Length: 582
Image (cartoon, rainbow, N blue to C red):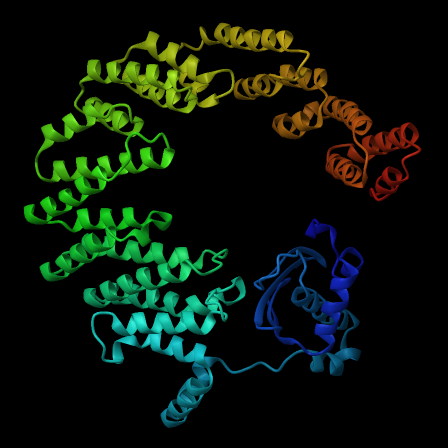
């Protein structure tokens, strides 16, 4: 459904009737709690349902151009949004009628409420305290949020209050089996999100210990929640990621040594816990421990753990997960060795494991930095050879890109041309431009025509597969070089809608007549190959676009008339064509 095709005055004609009935009932039952036009045509409000949901509607001249609701339903138009549309339409119609409807309009428009700030300035402190006490007793969710926001005042140390709070929130949101479904996930995670926000504020105020306690508690407790939760919303993963980010940022600051040691010991312990294998959080902990290891004793301790984890891998296994773990642990070990000043050992370790692409590439990049180009080139050649045996096309290209970088640094024009042409492969314009940069302006046209000729030849060789096999690649060259007559000719020889839709936008306006002819041929061919209302709506959309062109109305009229005659038996097509503006 395209919003721009819907009018606020007639929207119910284009939405499922069952949803319309539900939405209208919500509207008539007074479920619109708030609704306000925040800017011309932009409406925001709250609609009551099983919870209070925020809705947004954007109008341009009564056309609905955008709308949304934050309820969990995945339909395009939920009952809350439909209720809001009924409400907005009623207000707009009353405004259109004018002063006569003023009294009715007053009933619909809500009296402007005082702001929260204004109200708080007027309410006595004692009354506020009594309200919080009573509401906290009645509402578990509010009590948890209150506890999260003011956790520092509850007197417990080392994150115990944070952990207890998060456990309570999880228990309250879970069903009898202990599972937290999609609809209760946000409720369970609200305190965690508030705590993360508190930790950010504490970090900004240099209360480093509080930030650390919160981050550790959130990672541990939310991780335990995730194992029995539908986290389709991604809130749990976000809480954990932001908490790891907090700990990493803490380690970038001049925090006290005892706090750095706490992070190190806590991270090292967590890195060994099997439960964190889930989603790779064990690696996050290990990386954190290595970052926190600020002296040789701690670095050796972290190195011993990495060696222990490496020895536990089944290196005979061909499973991708084993190789993944091997590479990540080797990277950690190399980093630790470098931190310890054992650079020669780090290099030897990489040389011993060059079968792993990441390690080979890191060594090549180091050689490039040191300008040891001969060694870098040899490593690339060997890497390509291994990747070819494994049939890893993407890996081959990674090494070729490094070869190109080396050739550019050495000023080897012949190699730059050869490698960029190889990487171009008839379609990657990034390498086309690299190739172009190696030629003088008067030399380049001959190269361009050779590239085009090669693509055309390929088209002829594989004509039985698709007559426009390389048309997109050729069109990209014409656009890059501003060869407009050639582009028009190409589109006329390959009258296909996907090509026209992709490339017609680049042509100057003096080619509109030729484009319309190509579109007519393409639409005719498309309709011969496709039937059904959705295809006819697609065609109408293209014709509506052509209407905006110079002399577009006359041209669309002719096309529409011709299509109506040619496909006169297709009633649905005729109906769609009749919807075109006269």
